[in-house]
Image 1 (cartoon, rainbow, N blue to C red):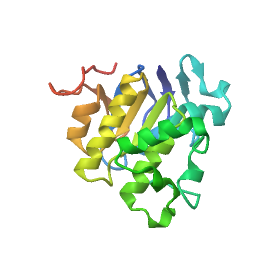
Image 2: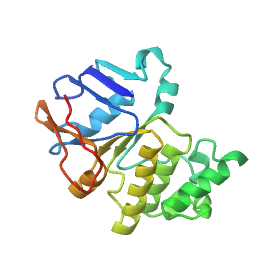
Image 3: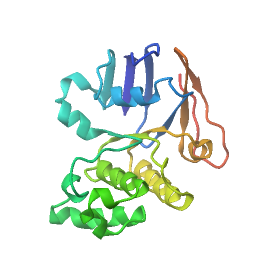
Image 4: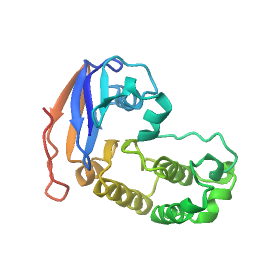
Length: 216
């Protein structure tokens, strides 16, 4: 379980909430309210006062690289610092990871050979899907997804949503920022509405999506 206590990020008042294993929380609000900053603060990528707990352990008790290995942020515009995707994937060169990697690439509509293509030759959508695979390959416990389908067409977005559902069924927690209200309805169990300086808890309503709850 991920638990946030009095986390102060950007202009927001201190936030406290929890996300259970296998649950998706949608972080919502107008542009500029601090959705991305909140995800980055939870991932310990930006300084933010307050406490963040993973399965009872506070982030200050865990070395930063290990925390980010378990609490993984995937940016809306992911960066690549390697000439090809393969060299940027944790454990991607290990034989034991090849089957899992092939399966994940196929799940998002990519071929294994795409790992060896120069980054500069890949489309924005291909880079975004590869970045999601990069974020998932070493099986973090918490996924912080910032517009994970923002650059994708409907068919590929549906593939990514299915992969996110699989992560939830596997017991991972997902914090999702998405501009697509229908995607939120399909994936989110709860919503956290950020409005100006005051976070407003809100229940997600849809009969077609997962069982919903309100934040307290």
